[in-house]
Amino acid sequence: MATIRLGDEAPNFSAQTTEGEINFHEWLGDSWGVLFSHPADYTPVCTTELGATSKYKKEFEKRNVKVLALSVDGLESHRGWIVDINETQNTTVNFPIIADEDRKVSTLYDMIHPNADSKLTVRSVFVIGPDKKVKLTITYPASTGRNFDELLRVIDSLQLTAYSKVATPVNWQYGEDCVILPAVSNDEANELFSKGFEEIRPYLRITPQPNLN
Ligand code: BEZ
Image 1 (cartoon, rainbow, N blue to C red):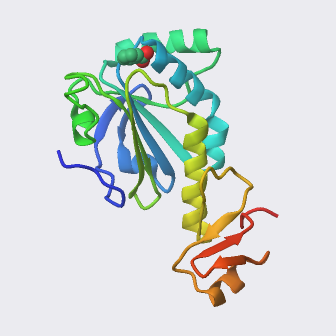
Image 2 (cartoon, rainbow, N blue to C red):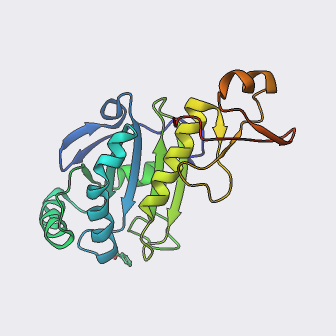
């Protein structure tokens, strides 16, 4: 198991999931992907996270993102737990959950941090681009539920960088001004950003979010 760093190819794997066996790269196709781990089935924080993920389905689809969850329990356990998630979170789980009983995927993605817990996964998140490269990693402890609004915010930022050559400044929220990537010259910026830009410093150039009318 090697450390997975930003820019690395996301390791491929085959795994049993609640929606059948998948080959990760084939399943991703041309989509962006979110692979995220959960410490265990039938645990309270995980239950709320998976319920929330189901409710965000449209938001992920809008961004061409496929979501894949993982926990180290088996398929039977996952299936029973999904009934509970649906009931308690008032939703329908609508994405696959890997049954990683042999910890193959957890080990591949370094999701078990032995000094936190020797057997269970921490709350890892990997965002993967259509080029299969890792764009973002986040690690939360088991006891802290992740912020899925933040996850969408980062995906929006990653996609703005990938498709519109801008970065997003501190505390940026969708619709707010962006900063032009340092690699873009002023001449190129004039061509790219029809709404213009403000040059506060040669390295600090602000433009309205480019993909909005
Ligand atoms: C949970 O998912 O609720 C959880 C799991 C492990 C430790 C603490 C909370």
